[in-house]
Length: 200
Image (cartoon, rainbow, N blue to C red; front, side, top):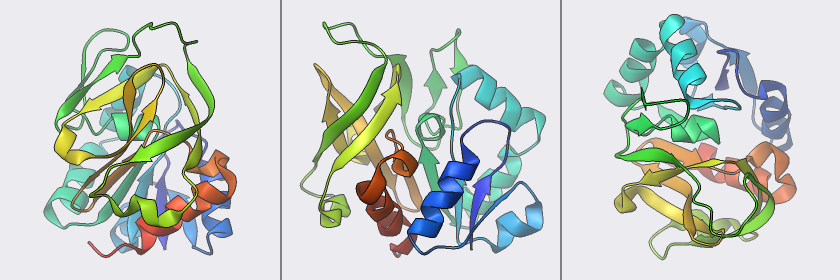
């Protein structure tokens, strides 16, 4: 069973449907016993960095996540804003400390002549060391105005939007995708299978 974290942000029902399409069982929850039993904790996110961190703090979820993910090694997947929260700091609506699980900062996409937000389908460029390339089709659906300028050692794929932006990250049992797997049809389902089935 895979737990989709219910903290008031993110299209949790769409993620649940995508899990079913990947033949995986999921539950939308923030109950401690279900988070403890889950194979993976999935953190979706739509909205502002500051609002998301405030919600996690107000619900006292951060100590729980740190215990399960950092100390006990439970698999974790952050989606879109959920991936950005893995960083050390975000610069949306001021300066907000993130979870700090992966080095890097979340910054506004620079204006290089492209429309912001970055919205729509785009191919990702898989880094040579990354096994994400095993999923085949790497065309995904994006929707974001900020990007995770992550430590290069954690970046497993990038997307070209006038400049190279982080598309996915991996660090031991922690995964993140800037795109929306739940909106990316077959390629998104394949990515979910890759993450949820990978042995960490």
